[in-house]
Image 1: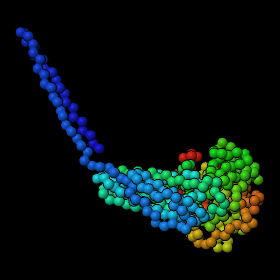
Image 2 (image 1 turned 135 degrees about the vertical axis):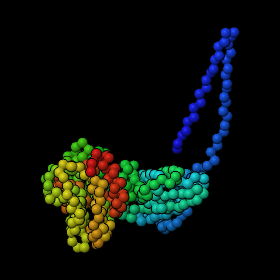
Image 3 (image 1 turned 90 degrees about the vertical axis):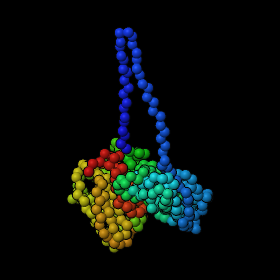
Image 4 (image 1 turned 90 degrees about the horizontal axis):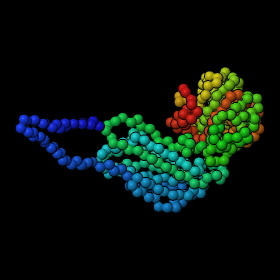
Length: 387
């Protein structure tokens, strides 16, 4: 907004005469009234149930009031879901546009939230309304009673006046209290938080703590010597998957950074030519995907997914995609997921990693490229990673 300032200087004129003196002065008074004729008023006006699984119980009637929307449901079985449609209305006289969306999920990672039809850059003209959907589901990959049984979604949408400005459209990404994508997060390990020489605690809320075998806890990382160090997790077998690691390689040797390979499975793999990629068992054979070159003693954040027909790998904020259609075969002999070695069953075998691992995450779904880049942006800040 351009502001114009008007300054008025009042002077006093004094005339001095021999016979005496007189002072001439003028008092100026300015009176005025200004009113704002426009109105800014954007509110939620309705919540409708679109669909619901038979195992879902609505415990309270959904309420839309002002800028708040609340709903409470109970789930019975993994795979249960309910979808609500929320109406947002611009009752004011100013056109609006979404400038920012902050969506956070807390408590149980077994309860997932998805938001569809609400994106940064969406416009809402005066005296009009729009709708978006909120899907709440009980993660179908859950195989045991979750540690936390309550999930909460906090959605903060910022509208600003639409003055014709350009705002790049962005999908809504739901993160947890750590700023990491929450949906499908099965195991989350950060060596800066709740880590010890014996246990690498799971921050996802699922209680899949890592059993540390030989790896040494440093200042915000675990050091792996390339000989017999490993961190064992539980069985983590999913038809679609995302593996994410923040790491630093010390020596060029074939090694498993995060994986569960054994006549099946998948692994974020370091090859002896100092390249990283995805080793995955589909179409009856192992596929080696991506093979991106690395530098020794350099910190990286890497994300690799597989969704049944394509794999995307992102490294320090840059992504590439590879098509590979096929059904992923689960590993044999109940092989667990491991950090820093290639496991057999619940015991380490070979391909020991030589370097530092700062963080690791396992998802039971293929994250979108936008979600992986969101996680990497957070990693690059947290761990001081440069491109």
